[in-house]
Image (cartoon, protein in one colour):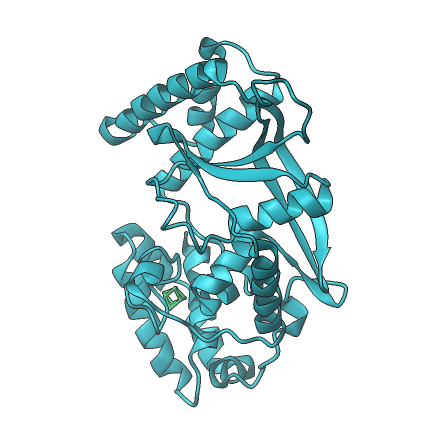
Length: 324
Ligand code: SF4
């Protein structure tokens, strides 16, 4: 944890500068960091020699005054372009500075309990299907094993989450038996080029949709499904969504599946929200990817704070622009 705070401190110091005195900037950053730590973390943090090194060393002045401006060597390059995922693109669009902290400076983020919970549910589904499916009891065994691995317990709050996960997985299992569509791929990866950039990712599940009742021959249709453990969003709220549009483009470019539709499956609420694609969707997502790539290559990392973005940002405690 203390190393994490020191990394945050360095990132915050790099972001400030603009002629400010290093010691003065450090005092402000330390005050923000200390306000977010436990008494034990505070005690260890205050014994760190990092501040003395930063204030005394010539490198500190360069960091604080941002003389070392080019982050070129740290960008996730692939050939003349960048390696990009849907999450990279969404992070940059939500706030370029957040992208810089996360993907360029690679400041690791502490996972919240809710995040560990979501990852665990996701992994249960991945392992269940990876092992060829099975009974509900087998699925729930995977949950218990994953729960322990994630360091989650059975106290009041985590016990409630565990019950919620069990109920959600039971509904998921029942739905799987009932549905007419046939799941054909799980965690299927893709990689393709878009302009100079390399796009990569994995789709949680691909279902082959049931054919027409009259048995007529037509091109097979598929549904690309991404699992979510967050609050369900409506199709309208998802109209600017990047992830599924990118997956649809990937299905066509990387897998040659021309006829696909896509949906988010909110596992905890057992709700599937189809996200329709307008006719110009491929052009629109291509434009978005190229625009984001251009911004990253130009090292345009100015913050775009908003209460919505900052409240979910792992770097808000040190970010000078935070609106959280
Ligand atoms: S706290 Fe807000 S402005 Fe700062 S990096 Fe995060 S999202 Fe951007």
